[in-house]
Amino acid sequence: MDKGQYYVTVCASGGGGNFEEIIKSQKKVGYKVNLLIVDRECGAIDKAKKYNIPYVFLDKKELGEGFFSVMDRTIPVNTDLIVLAGFLTIINSAFCQKWQGRIINTHPSLLPKYGGKGMYGVKVQEAVLKNKDELAGCTVHYVSEKIDEGEIILQRTVKVNEGESAWELGGRVFLEENKLLVEAIKVIMSRQADQNI
Image (cartoon, rainbow, N blue to C red; front, side):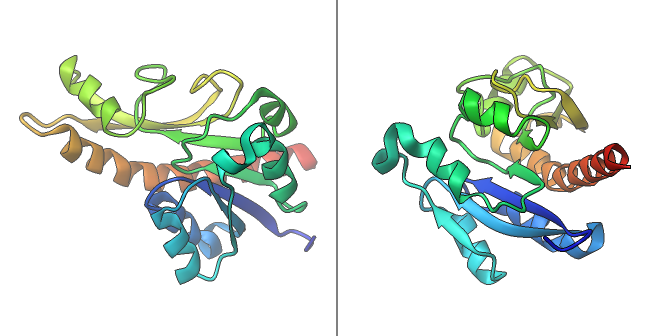
């Protein structure tokens, strides 16, 4: 491993918007994306190709119960942090335990509100609007064995506009998520550096 180089592995299932922001911020923040892992054919692969980031497609149907042991073997040994950037596979407990404190997730709500199984994407913003919340937002948190219940690292709020759709609100939250994820990586790098002193 390069002395002082900080490596990030990203896992994604969608369009790769968060992934692209992470790639673009590498030099500024001082980390390097060493791999993208996807669990389905998705737009994030196109982003990996665009920026010459190596990627691996792990097929859940094909791998079945062996998915996480293969995923664990796929992650480069020099990885300092795993970032779930719109990764829809629920991480199992053995993987969570192995990477405890070194795996984070982004979620499009102000956790603990609107977290847990089935709460992802536009469903979250539909719940925000249905409950007439004044604020929406996003959270970056450590991944634990309980879905969306790990320690919160950072949150950002977004004011709900009158009459906007769940898709419009979700789009605005997503833009904040992009920035927040990079900020969270910065925070964790700093924390880990302090612990290594």
